[in-house]
Length: 76
Image (tube, helix red, strand yellow):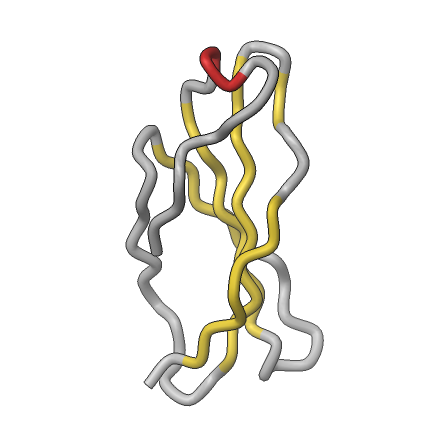
């Protein structure tokens, strides 16, 4: 998964990004996260045929920004 750089106020201070993903095909699944300093991430351990809800947020010295929703992805 990849995304564009953060924009707007304080975007110049972003040092990393956090990706949230949830297996929406599995009732009761728990949100997982992966943090990276780049603008892309490879998510491993996803289950073929399952759909995942994705979101990404930026991080800087002040903390975490609001997550921006991404597409729903079906692994196949």
